[in-house]
Image (cartoon, rainbow, N blue to C red; front, side, top):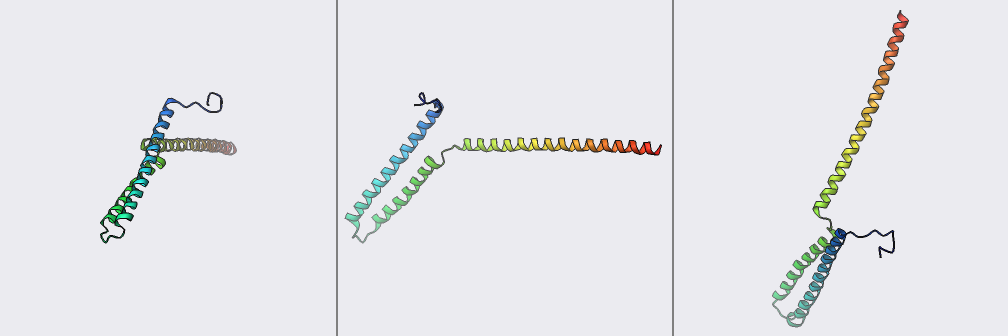
Length: 140
């Protein structure tokens, strides 16, 4: 498709490998979620037909415990796959680049400020010299 449309850039092998890894992780999450839903549905059906009228609620407690722990694992898996996609190294590199850019801008601002101050000082000095020359001429 990119060959036909010159506006769409080609995908590099590195980008393709990164996309393939991302697709594998997302597929893994979807399989994990499907297994979670089917397993919990099965356990709830078993509880309903076999243990619903029982006075012993051990099986119910086990199902609830399993549901909560596994749900937390599913949420964590989702966050890792969909939300925390950048590696910590990439985040730190971006942060350092921003910090360095801010430092360079500050240096440029300080240089411009110093140049302006020097220019003002040289104007003041030349004015003072002119005034001294005028005063000395006036006294003479």
